[in-house]
Amino acid sequence: MNDFPDPKNVYEKRIVAFLDILGFENLVKTGKVQEILAVTTDLEERFSTLEKLGKPIELSVFSDSIFLSDRISGDGFSVIRLIEYVRHIAAGLFWKGILCRGGILIDQVYHKNPIAFGPALIKAHYMENKIAVYPRILAEPDVITHFLNYANSRAKLTASAGKNGTFRTDFDGMEYLELFGPNHLGKHADSGLLTDTIYRPAWNIISKKLSECDDTRVRQKLVWFKNYLDASEKDFGNCRITVNKH
Image (cartoon, rainbow, N blue to C red; front, side, top):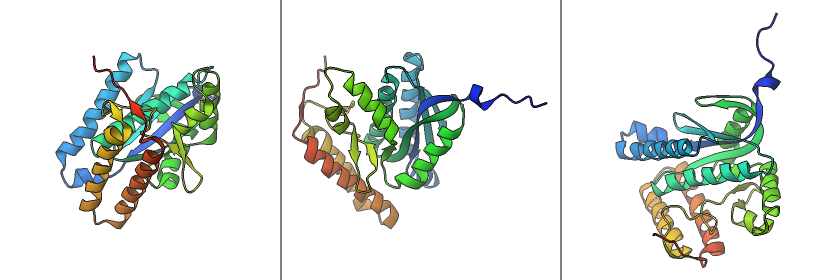
């Protein structure tokens, strides 16, 4: 008699994201303690935020990888929530000089931190490891569909405007997460044009990395990110934001 539970009763359909922190292994090998602490401190802040929110999102960390998931809510808000959370993590790491890549999809998984397993985890890891290649976070079509359905249900958010500020289509036809732009300010942003408050500081970070890098494979990833910044700035650089600091 088989005492193992039926997978149908263990797994649940969730939106998941798998992120890989690029260059983390090299940071460890070269003993760059400050950079490592910057990453771990950022993740500790994310855990703290989740606890304050009652942990609607599950988050697990495996060495240099991050796995997140959320239940699919009836109105689709959980998809928006996870997308924004992933974007905050990726952008937060970037301002500390760390790039990441990953994949977002919807499938069956068991996830109760720290334990996670199932088809969604396997597929998301494959998406990150074999398809993303560059420091981008890919999103499968059904994630985009859920996002657009939620956008259409909100009178103040048109689907096209929401998608254009949240996802971009790359040269290979893959949809990936827009880290910056008007839909994401982040704690780095200040009042003014995005060219001045976001893109110029970001470009300086990438330029510095390029000037210090002689590894061809790493340079390819940095050049991709620079091209992304150029394209994003072309679309959103003239957007003006006002940040209330009081």
